Length: 523
Ligand SMILES: O=P(O)(O)OC[C@H]1O[C@](O)(CO)[C@@H](O)[C@@H]1O
Image (cartoon, rainbow, N blue to C red; front, side, top):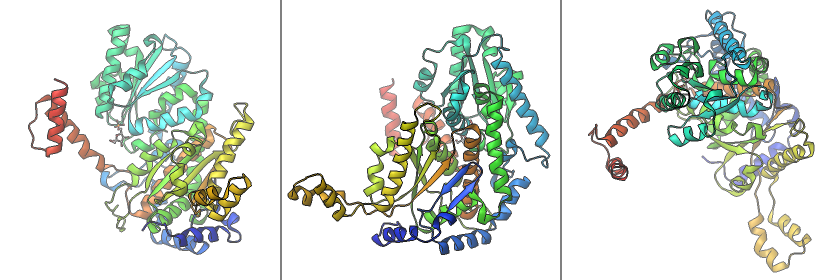
């Protein structure tokens, strides 16, 4: 069911006018405020969502998460990403986690203070998916704090153009390569790590190789077997999922680049959100309420996608990060074993940075027929730290204007008046006004941060993680596995072999044609 009828547009406009909406539908959590007054959630709808969350035992699921229970059923392990941020003294693994963090912190200090025997000006971070998107997002968000540390470059794609670009103009003598792979088996990362090793050897010679490399993995034995220096392999726990792992040793490049103080603040922001999610009752719990809203908007009202509009240049990677977090977590239909049947999965998450999206896809958001729940993210201090306060204000004004336009729209009569005021002739007015009609009644949320600081960004990311978890619980999905990605990986290897002529497995006609074409083109 797609929510496109004129009735529902009007319904949202009516709901928004309900008394007291500003008090009841502006939800506060640590460092993040969510204004959902323009979402199609009435007072009665919200109450029924709360009841549904109680029936689905969401509060028990939250308790299990923080107790370290084995809630990732299909992989029979707990989900412990939150424990990397503190509040985990009750866990048997807490000492081990503290050790891992300490080792990373000490290495970060050593690198920053020239302890490797050369000044590290650039870190080449090699990883993909959860071993890449979080560090990329946080580097972009917080890089002004990293002016005294090395700069980060990232390489993720198996397309060698990525490696070529990442190393373009790079001085190997001042570069530290960090290979990040939880499994240490991911083909893209293996391929790029190999290229990096060859690049270092060609520039510096074999004897310098080890001093320019480090690795992060939950399979240190594989990292060592591959050739990473044994004393520079930083472990991470297998109970920390890739897309939830930026807080772990996966963030080593960030710790070095931003410094340990900023890193502690980032973890602190995440921890503040953990305490809130763990302790607040459902009716005051920001991530839980957002998940309830998601259930209502996407699962009940059938809105198929969510567009993330980060009106903050520094958060421009947020949509990419959330795509993996939300779609890899809840884009699956196997029931979690919690007694709920998942026949609805996560919405499609997409988006871009404001105001760039306004000049490309917002047209569809205003007048297209397919629905996306819009989610704005803004920071109150936009432009202030950069010394461009007026431009930052204009950024915020644009975000507010888009959200208001989504809601109020413009009638044909209003369009006619506007054209007449501009002195347009009557024949043109009659022809043009219908095109300017925007029905409005389009939902949006506004997520508000005070600033883009390590603490607020930490809280924001942890909020999204917990919202994703809570939504998974409402859908009856285990958000911590990703079996759906395995098949394509296996097939890619087989097809690679088929192109090389070492596999003759029977395949569908289209793939066989592509294999043949590729063989001919690359002979
Ligand atoms: O860190 P790794 O093990 O290289 O995995 C990278 C990514 O690949 C995936 O397993 C998907 O293929 C993600 O879940 C993960 O973040």
